[in-house]
Image (tube, rainbow, N blue to C red; front, side, top):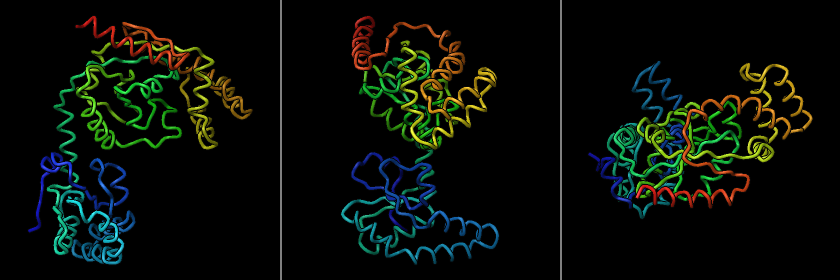
Length: 341
C-alpha cells in the first residue's frame, strides 16, 4: 500500500506540492491550484490507450500505457527531481493506477510522497460542494452599464473586486471570446472558489453586473442571488470613448478582425442586413471606430437597454475619466458604509 492523503487534509497544509500526472489536455481543462503538470502520457498516447481499452482489452491498454511511460521515464524523473526537497502529493484522474505507480516508484527512491485519495475527481467534488454551501460575507456593489463603458477597467483598479469575466476568459456576448481562450466550467469554478476565499474578509466587493450566464459558463446560484441583492451602480461613458475602447479591446489582430466580420454577418435581425454590411465594409476600409460605433449604438445598446432599465440604481458614475471614476467609487463605498452603519 502506498501512503495516501485526502483532499481536505492536503489543502489545510500549505507546504505540499501537487504533481498532476494527467495529460496536458486534462490539466488545461482544470487542476488543483498551483499544481505542476508532469504527465505520464501525452494527449495522443492517452487516446491510444483509451482506444485499446475500449476495443481490445484492459490488459493491452495497461501494457501500452507502461510502454509509453517507460520511454519518457528519464525526462519524467528529471522534472520530478526539481521538487525532491518538497513534500509531494501525486494525483491522476481518480486516484488509480497512474498516480499509484508514480507514488510507489518515488517512495522506493526515498521521496517524501503521498497519493491523493480519489485523485482530481475528489478535488472537483470538493469545489462543487464548497460553492454549493458557500457563505460569502461581503456586501456586493454591482457595476452596471452598456458595453464598453469600462466596467472591467474599473474592477482592475479596485483591489476588492471580483472579475467574473476575467475568470471566465469571456466577455459575455457574441463577440465575447474574441482574443481570449474561454475557460471550462470546471476551471471557472476552481478559480472562482479561490478568489472568493481571498475576498471573504472584505466588507464590500465590487463586481460587474452580469446575466447568470457568461458565454457557455454559469455563475453559481448562491452568488447570482447575492449579486441581485447587492447595491447597484450605473456606469456611463460617452460614445466616442466607448468606440475607441472597443477598437483597442476587440480589433487587436487580423484574426480578431476577421472573426468580428464573421460574427457580424450572423447577428440577429435587430441590426438589419444593410447595417451589417455597412459594418463589414467599414472594417474592410479600416474605419474601425465607425464600425464599433454602429455596433454599440444600433446593436448592443438596443439589446441591453431593456435589461439595464429593469434595475434600480442607487448611484451613477461617469467613466469618461477612468481615474476620477475609480476615486468616486472608492468614496461611494465609504458613503454606503456610513449609511448602513
